[in-house]
Amino acid sequence: MIETKRKSTIVVDAVNAAGLAEIGGFYETVRYGGGVFPDDVTLAARLDGRLVGAVRICSEGGVFVLRGMQVAPASQGQGIGRVLLDFCVPYLNRGLSYCVPYEHLTDFYGQVGFVVTPPELLPIFLAERVAQYVATNRPTLVMKRVPS
Image (tube, rainbow, N blue to C red; front, side, top):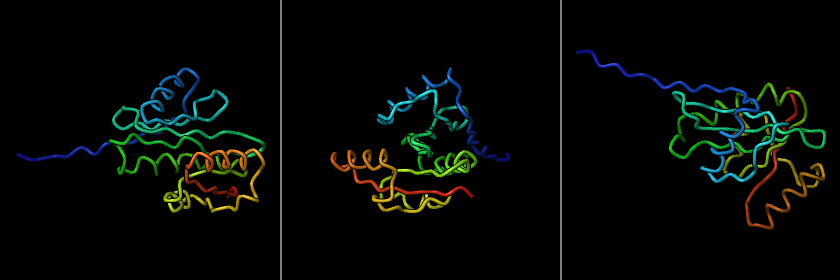
């Protein structure tokens, strides 16, 4: 008898308006409270057809902001976040972009060109958001990416 192993496939797609409710439900299950909005580019990662990750690319104040990068806890460590991040690159190449990750994710976002940026160099709306995060004891930093 020959034993075979099937490798799972990660598929990432842009989500249309009809799929936003599913993403909203996913975000609730992973306790992400940033919401889902029709004007954002929302990407969904599926592993063997199951929704296991999502991310949003928001146009705000003349720049793009990568938000809501989430992978289901049971599916972490399988490269899903990296596939999602790679899928974001063509969208991020449309202009200057930022993300506001936790400090331990600096290298992860650095893989696609994000670099840590001092708070004093941020657009006002983003500096205000970061100040709110800091006020609620959420340790974050801001990273900037110039399109390639």
